[in-house]
Length: 113
Ligand SMILES: [Zn+2]
Image (cartoon, rainbow, N blue to C red; front, side, top):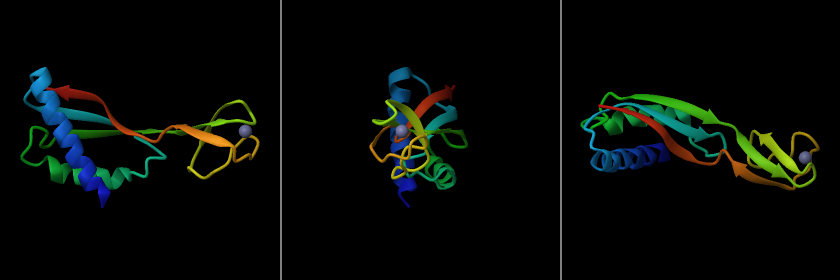
């Protein structure tokens, strides 16, 4: 389950931020997960609680914001919303699309003490 190692990355990130910004507890983490990132929000939620035990973010609340996949369609000359990486353009059906959004996972905001 790669969500576990993702959670470990988040914890390391939080620990670094705590040093940089001088806080000692994390109360809430808002996490953006792109729908094309292949991260399972439920698995991540489970891993989060386990990995954060004993850390500065123990019992922190995890708020997941799912971000739609987005791609540029060369036929339509515009950004379109896509559900899966290998889907074509929902407007014209062309497969000449270039994914340009919804692939990453990132911490959007923190509530800290
Ligand atoms: Zn199109």
